Length: 112
Length: 77
Image (cartoon, rainbow over all chains, first blue to last red; front, side, top):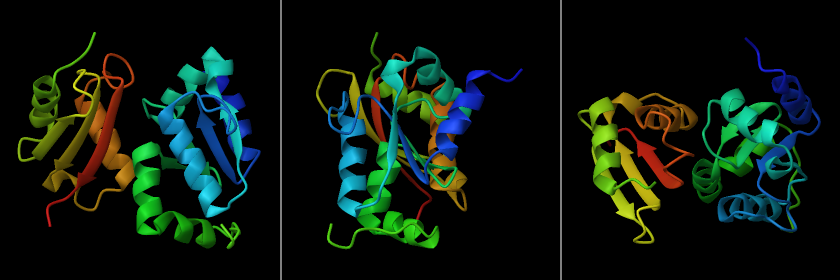
């Protein structure tokens, strides 16, 4: 049976090339792991949208089943699940995140 | 309810008997861990899938009684 919240989650993912499910907002992250991914995205200089899972308990639980991933934050790029905090950090440090964004045609602010 | 490092290791080991596992209790509070898991099972497997396999080995505890487990996964060199 499909969870009805999945349609809302998919709509969020489709709404931006880079979408982060997080706890809190970029200005006021409510969790250190979410804060770290926000920092990385800002540093890479890529525009992104966020969904605050703390505002909606259904999304907060639903996204875990949707992605088959038990924790928040979760990063989607062009509709593809990229990973959580550890994977994003590893990819950023290896330069892979920047390469992936370029490959997907998402421009990064080189000044960052 | 927290988990000990040895419980975490046992669960991962039962899913990946060949794995080299190191677990660090980051804050000394049995709540924030960092784990490195190196196993042949990860060869040719995407990073997302590797982490999903470890989460599966933890049988739903991740995100529940296990609040924070920073993961690094790899196939042996």
